[in-house]
Length: 130
Image (cartoon, rainbow, N blue to C red; front, side, top):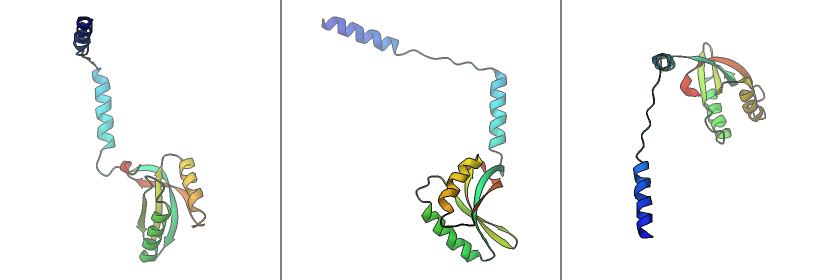
């Protein structure tokens, strides 16, 4: 009986050394390389949906609100809160979403504390922000 188990173990060990060979067409590889080059281009921006929480001419007011929003959204994983300066105003933005519906879900959580918040189409999003 011991000999049979040893024989089966050796047989399984021989079968476990199988190799898998994958061949791909050159056109598929060229398409993937082109897409990779396009996605990782330095300074590339995409259009996405974000939430504008506040606007002010006072930078320190925006920075204070940014800290408050980060505390309020600490349970939301991956939501980025940042500010931008468009002369003469500072704008506080949150999130980067592919669809307007995703942004509206976050807006529903923010609107209680910041009633002037709204969803807008943001064209200054980097692919890494998603």
